[in-house]
Image (tube, rainbow, N blue to C red; front, side):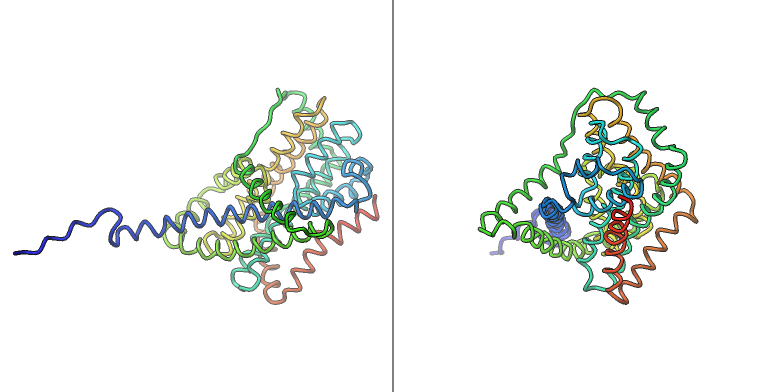
Length: 390
């Protein structure tokens, strides 16, 4: 009597199943990690806002912006305020509201908008710190973080003097505002709503712990940093395994073939999540893991700069007259013109890339460079400018 023949392997059995099950599980885990990472970024942002809401600026945010008239003080205030609240969207929305109320002129608000662009890039640097214990990863991550900084600094260095002497951005925006009309409306990103839900759960747990009122912001900040570092460590390793080989080559080839595609993709992602910090911070672990090159990450970050202007445009819908729409359009023009001036010219485009790489190499030789860079760029120089020119 012959023994029964074994049943044929089903679709869930054998090595074939392993070939697709492992990548699927790894992909699901990666999505979970990315969600945790975004919640951690939101948590850090809200924690810093909570710490900043103690009146350290000497009044409400609307009062502080409305009192500034000197353009260099405005630029410095835009940097400092955005660093403190960790959100250029909050800064630009506040500026739009103050301009819309008639308290602040469009001319005085333009440097503040430019300063917000510089201040928001500190988030990338904080994210890159999650790789500081691994030299090669940190070099890639820190260069990806600071290339955005150097682009914005270069754009301000060119366009602020041009605006102060010719008013080209504000006058063009005024003409566009006279032509464009908005019926009004709003946009709610489901991704951002999901991230906010995660943040509310975390903040609720911190509040329920019974900490003193003064410790709440610090506890939230520490929790956000801890989750960020854990998620970054896991994201980097999983991306390297999941996207290694042909997929990695295909991604870099697609982005390398068309910078315009990268810019549009970065803008689209930022409009979807309504935060340039989220988009650019996601690029840091991609670059750290070696999945994407610095040259291919750069256009995505430029696109994020353009995409983030949607927040100011949406904020202008709630304001009467054309002044609020004008300053929102100045924000759009500044980012679009900045990209148009810097990226198409190879010699100019290489400047932020070269500076970012040089700083990253210095940072892995001596970590003190990181502290000096952050302190000088985002705190000391803007603070000195604010104190001197306000």
